[in-house]
Figure (tube, rainbow, N blue to C red):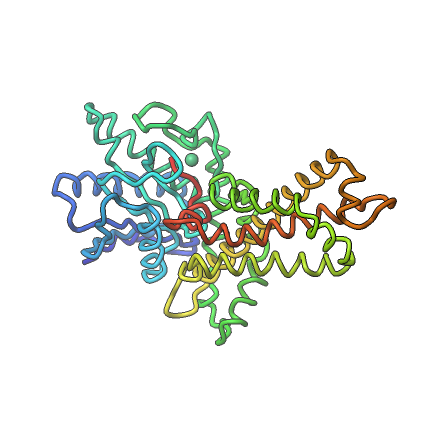
Length: 389
Ligand SMILES: [Zn+2]
């Protein structure tokens, strides 16, 4: 059951396709409100960004996930598969049900820049008693989520201001600079997708190679923008497993002996192998290869996977750098003659950088185990969510 709201004038403007995904089980009243919301967003976008040819599509689904509490991660994955299937550029999943919060107290919306999909729940704004405020609140919430999908960051002066609750308070609009940023971002996206150009490779490896060559700059931007070094802050077990194992390593003489026996060049090789293996083990251990799954080879699906893997890898590298700095600090503070004795280097100066590298590398090994201990797909959520708002 789908309806089409294709805009009439197609001309030479770059095309942007936005979908709205709704459960057929929503009540009549909610469906009317959602319809109003979509119409308003569509009209505003056509007015603010007339240089694009917008197409909007309302998708009503009977197989909308209904487990309670409603998990935004499940909705994002469900939505991103449909987004690829319907060949949309962006998709908003709209629901009247409350969402399950993972990292914050409450959650009204979850954008995922990586999947180009966002989830918006009207449950809390609807608790507001003044109908006018409800309308303003849900519109602002949708703009905030769309703004994240289009690469905007937080800003106190516009609708991109982070909020605890969405009550319809000002500011409700994007600033002039933000609109300019959105324009630049959308121009990139509106290029024809690789599979539409007729030059797409037939094998998966070559297809991924083509995507990397065409898009390396924007892929790198997405990976860096994600700030994966914050990843570990959300992952209790991951950091705990690492901390405990590093403490034990520091206290065992064998680790120091081993460190003295490994040559520096070997250690660098081991370090690269461990970082790659740890990333791969978390990637497959947490079933991240399921994200962005598509029947055919499609640029958007390949992009999501490359960004996901790249983000995880950058996250592990920055975690290693943190561990290295902490290890260096600890080695600096501990009495040098004791450590040199453990390492069997009596009388010689202790190579502090070498040992810090070793400890950090062992720590990453432990963290890959800890990463796979994370439950309820928290790690997946950390990687896929742009934020909870
Ligand atoms: Zn935000």
